[in-house]
Length: 547
Image 1 (tube, rainbow, N blue to C red):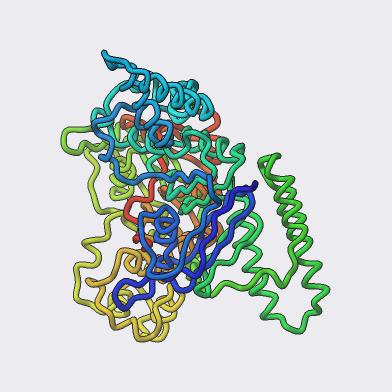
Image 2: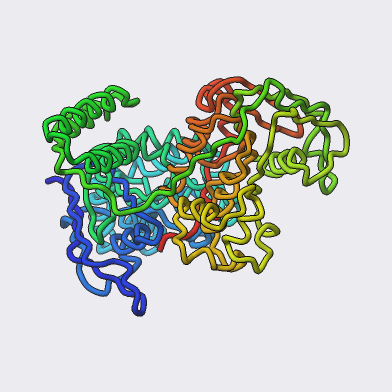
């Protein structure tokens, strides 16, 4: 029997707010399904209903009888008094209960006939559930995720946050669950652990449902997309990039209504063929290609969600001399975060500053943006350059009672309100939103206003520090495309793997104050430096919450 999870006519109200409206879903096949949708559409909420953590206002969830559902727990303190191995094995609660009941019976001093019969029953069930391999299976998962054997018998409360995350993920994966639900599984994982998880899921034979803002991860593992749109869930074959590009293609084609349908179908088929050929994992490539070949044009609907239009156009072309940095050093709170750093930036450079040392990256950007003085050394911008800076912390920038349109006007050479408003319109602020005070904007709105500032500046050098924080996937995708198209010089940091991989042609990392500088792509950099993989941790910290 194939495993199956079904949701029927789910509704969820928060007071007067309709969080989910008549949502139905039927997943029968052993696929990796990624849930996507605009911020606030209820992806994480939907998963919590499937796990039983939340009761819907109406509707029901049906799981095939006998199927075991497992999900990634978010409470990092729930298992503080348990050992690491026990915590993982608790992923299969029935197996864990049998183990404890068996141990309790065998510990008895007055072992009765009834105890013997009960122990025999338990032993039989234990063997059926591969109980004798439980500890070694749990250890294999832990080791794969980077939790070394020395920690396996420690209490959970003695572990740091990143190790706890890995243990809880191992718990969710333990015991070959029939249905696996994962909400942001790559968050706080280093890239070695993420790669191991990718391989695990690709080779996993049962049903997986995942919510993630990590597009790079989704593109690697998922075989179908569940798009929450039009207050419904629509299933599409393929990964995130395929869904995005095909939905954009459909929008384009609908605008060209005079085209014959045969031509449209031919274009879509060519696209599918091209996309299938680029699949990176052989096992998935075959099944994905088969699924894609069956797609008909009418199956793909244009999305109702709106994407920002991000287009950075410099006012002047950049010359050969861009930036020279010589022997920069800076100490903050007694720690030397920059230690004798030197480099030269070329006119075609898009440099990603990577690694987990956020303070070093931010300090360097602040110095280059003229907001902080170095302790030693110097830097020099070329005379043809103009810079615009996107800070990681924008608190000071928005400490104002200005309306959005007035705040943005100060950064524009053209002071005409209509001209300024068009940049806000691109970032999904309708005309009347321009009067909103910048002080009261949400985290995501502030980021979109800052991106408007970068666009209106016309700068040919952008210094951008973690721009994807607080953004939904639609905005991240639009930003990614805008950075790729930008014809100027880019110095940036981003937690988003896909943004870094598709944008940067040069990688820099500051380790213990010293600079590593490689002309390469991000993936090539990681392949050639094992320690770099361990230093890189994916996180969605600061992202506007999805209900």
